[in-house]
Length: 267
Image (cartoon, rainbow, N blue to C red; front, side, top):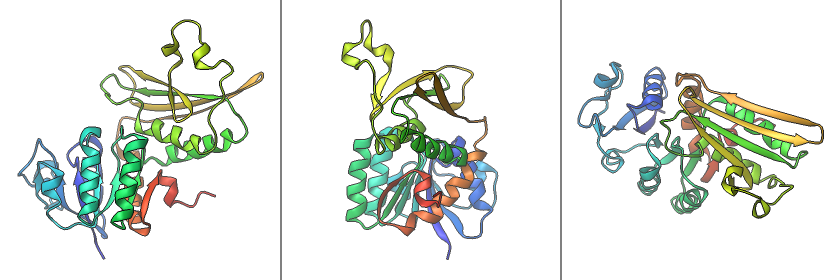
């Protein structure tokens, strides 16, 4: 049975790569797309992919008038939560690829998902290498109580920290909060230079030209340290396989799950 997908952000950097990949599958089809820039056009014409025949709408609310099984959000934080809630209320499962949503946002989304008996899979980063980085960090946090996270991205990225780092901090919070030898309130000087406390982790966001997306977590122990880091390249290809997997798995549970590994067997 074909999985019908409504893809919001279908003409963007990551969304267009996903749309083209879906066109090559036999079990998934894009039945509606969202892009303000290309509204009222055909997705295949915009992406030069004749196998994509669906219309493009200006808003998710308009696009969701067409029945779909999965709503995939690759938009902006300021509209993503409203998109997700609308999709759930209209009976679709949801995959969230948009970064910048907060833990409070996800708490609200979880309630709506349960009420509508639908699944929401929120993935800060669909790359398999990132999934492994997060898993390795969780293991390390069980044994090493002190760590800090550095979040790197281009100077054009507006949200901070990135969705990848938000997800990493959330996952580590389920293990424990990082320990600080000197509490933040006892910092002498400018406390903001110590970064921000995000879900029990100290996070430092760097936004500079020359970076794409990188995440680094440094664990400290007496006379030694452990660094786990992921660096993304310039293409969206690393995220495609994980996104396809998320679409295929999001209907297998009810409620909210965070992280691609939540639907993978990594034990």
